[in-house]
Structures are given as C-alpha cells and as structure tokens.
Image (tube, rainbow, N blue to C red; front, side, top):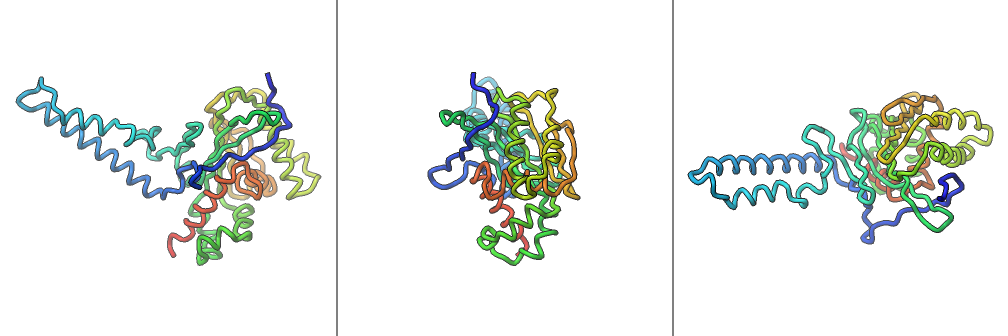
Length: 296
C-alpha cells in the first residue's frame, strides 16, 4: 500500500472543455432562491392536483394527471442541481460535481460561498487522487465595507487584473473561511498534518522569511492524532476579525492563533498566485468583483 506521506507532486484539475468551471457558483445567489421557490411551488401544485383527483367520482381509477404530477415533482431533471436540498434547510447546497461533496451557500450566517474546487495529489507521478473538495467563503458586508470605497468604481475586468485588490483581499481584516471536505477515505490526520507542514511552511517562508518554524508548529499541532477524518469529515479554516485563524474539525474547535502572516499563508493556498485549483480561484475573484459592483 502506498503511503500518503509527503513528498507529493501537485497537479491542477482540468477545466471543462467549454471553458466553464465545474463549480456552479457562478450563478447569482438570487437565482438560487428563485429555483428553490419554483421547485416548492411545483411540488405544491402537484400535490394539490393529486388531492383534487383523489376526491373525484372514480377514486379507484388511476388518473394520468397523478402520474404526470409525480413525474414532474420527482424528476431528476428538476431536482438534480439541488439534490442535497432539504426543505428544512434555508441554505441550499452547491455540489462539487466530480466528488459529490456538497457545500452550503452560507456559513456562519453571513459568509457566502464564492467558489469550490479540488485538492489533488499525484502519487509518484503515476496516479492522481482527489484528497478533498473545498469551498471559499467571505463575509460580503465586510468585503463591501472594507474594499468597496477603494475598488467599487472599477469594472469587473479591472478588478480581476488588479494585483493591489488581490493583496488587500488577502491581507485585509475580512472574515473568510475555507471549508475542506474529505473525499479520500484513506486519509489520516497525520497526512493532513504533514501536508500543511509542507504547503503552509513554504508560504510562511515566502511571506515572512525562514524564522517562522514555531508559528508553523503551533498551527500543525492542532491536528492531533486523536482526530479521525473519514470520508465526509469537514475541516474549517477561518480568518476572524483581528487576523485570528480559527480551526475546527467536524464542528469541534481545534485551536485559534492570532497571526496575520498565518492567515495570509492559508488563504494563499486557495486564492493566491499558485493555488491548488486555478478554476476555483478564478471563480472566487469573479464573484468578489461582481459583489463590489452590485450598487454601481
């Protein structure tokens, strides 16, 4: 059995032939609400029709309307994009199509999903595996408050090309979360710790120099051997106000570290110059640029 311990070669997931990212986050979230409303309305109409038919003079006879209504209500074509949606859940999920990992459109009440992607690894250059899917979230109100005055008048294309905008996003005191969902069933917490030692360690050196081993150790020591991370486990890395990085594993807080350098290094893995998934980074940048243009 091949160990998942490092070193690994990183590879980027391929884009769809038509140039569209596999993430469906490019849809406005208002469209999401409309889609869900239409689905519920269709269901209500179908059941109303069924009830009316059941009260007809021939209750024992199957009516074609019943079959049509049920087919419409439970059609894969109607519900497939929102297969993980529960009527009790106000935040519909967005699915990473390759792995089936579902991400809520909103976390912590105010952080909205901007893009989803995949973390892949190559074993000895022979086989690529999908390790985890991830979603990048940001507090939209804070984005507009902190960046809106400076960048709100720029066009979407200008914002996407602005290095200063990206730097202000990465280093700003803006609430953001990267949500990781494990999809590789044989991944161990040791492998996660080893992976972060390499990837976060390299970023700490780039942005802060070589004298940050203690900071790296404080971060990686949060991933203790006692944690089990089977397929479906969720790790959240959140930048809170004051540049505090908060780590949770399956909803349980693993630790918090106040460090602007560490927060920047974590975000760089997903939306920096050399991200794990370039398509996801592009989705995040496009969504953020569009959000700043809402009132213009």
